[in-house]
Image (cartoon, rainbow, N blue to C red; front, side, top):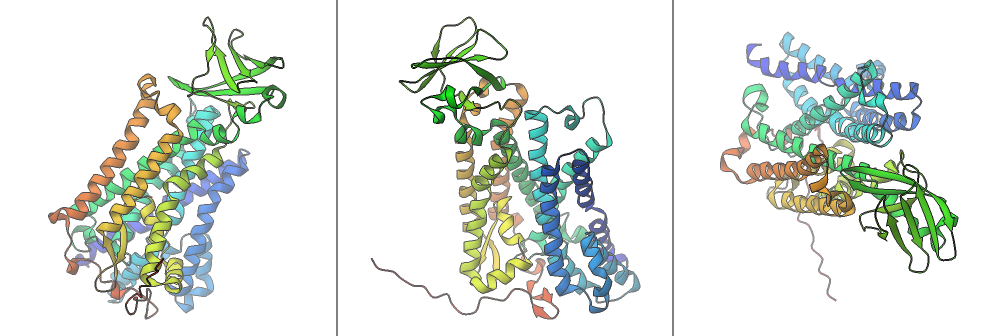
Length: 479
């Protein structure tokens, strides 16, 4: 028993750490109670997906005699904890079969929830928090003077999801089908230097992408693209009797203007807050002009965008979220899927993804990429990792280009805005630097004998992931 203390500690942590599952359900219920069904349904999506993927694994791994009642544990999302407790009991009883069960738990069960539930919840909670506190200026979400239980629950769900998702990715890198982290040492290798370096590289990448998501949501790029007032011309005033001027000047500004005059030549809009502040739409030249208070009229700055309607405390947060996803997550998923299909073939790839959806989700929040090695197994690939890095870098470049009207005001920004703009690239560079150390620093290379033997990962006696048989046929196309 003394020799297995580390394994018991890991199992105990596996039982206690998934607090975010229940805190997320608590947040979901609170959102329903407070009349935010859209937010609540959004929070339910990752939870239901986690139940669905857990059910697939439960069908293959659960013992027949326990299936009659353990499906209830899947629905209430505590079957993984039950599986871990069962292994710990086997250790205490001296049942030698616990090692095989623990390998199954580590590789198939314990690494699933962070990908299917924790990571998506982090993104959704970020979107909810930015929308409510920074756009709608809802004091209840900011806590204010009243540190209510709902606010504490929200913060606990958010913070726990960030760290547990990072730790879950580490568990997959250690125990998954292409584990490259050491499985020997203190706490089964979790306290090794390489594990710490990889953990912080993942944590920095998650924080960087989360910060970029928050900045894009606050900038409202979808609103500027799809509701720009000039697109309602030439008679903007007729189609948009009210416009909102979006720009960044020390703070994020969203000034509302109402139509107060219209001729065949121009439409004149007056600010709701300052009667001497005017926007003028020139119908002939299709250009905007601005006359600020106590200043002469001039052509509207390219970094200011009038949008049709009153958007002072509203936004297209859903479209902004989708835009961020397609720029910063979707390309990495497609690239990893292409690599997987090229390695295993379409049929085997599909069956593999139902078991290991983490394969295409891992490059989304880390730069680590994988492909078949010389002996026909999936393993960490330097080339694929660096390609993933450049794809991520391109996504950041396009994202910053979309919100350039905010980024360009960086020297004039408020201190906390400057800090966010600074930390996003800094954490991205740190994540890539730590990834480079893992790939190329000799002291961080793990000998093969200290990595989990993937041949031991089975589904009821059958190998879970089929090895790619034969050589891939290369077809040449001549034009």
